[in-house]
Image 1 (cartoon, one colour):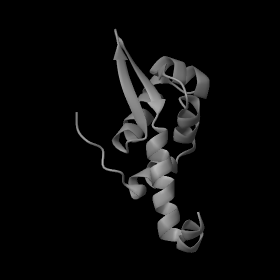
Image 2 (cartoon, rainbow, N blue to C red):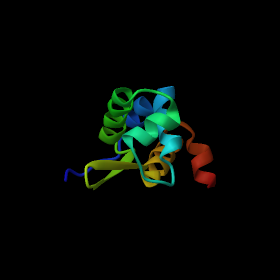
Image 3 (cartoon, helix red, strand yellow):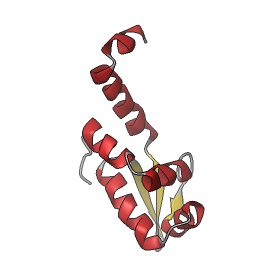
Image 4 (cartoon, rainbow, N blue to C red):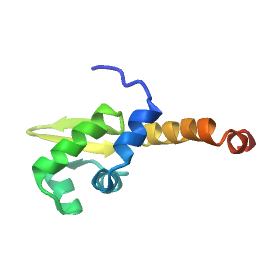
Length: 98
């Protein structure tokens, strides 16, 4: 398994899409497979798969394989890390206070 190196730029690119944000909200705090995410977000399975690949490449979702399904959940640690990095870069005075 390849190690994901946190990249705030990849995070912002992945986060910039409204559909990906909906996917991230859907799989926050729970494990869902593609069809469940598609139903929750209201888009097709191929569309969800495309967006999940981008989120996975950015390290924003974790995966777990169970039988014939791959389940996804939001990588909250990566989201928190990248938000902290962005805060340190673009709001350093605020970052020092916290």
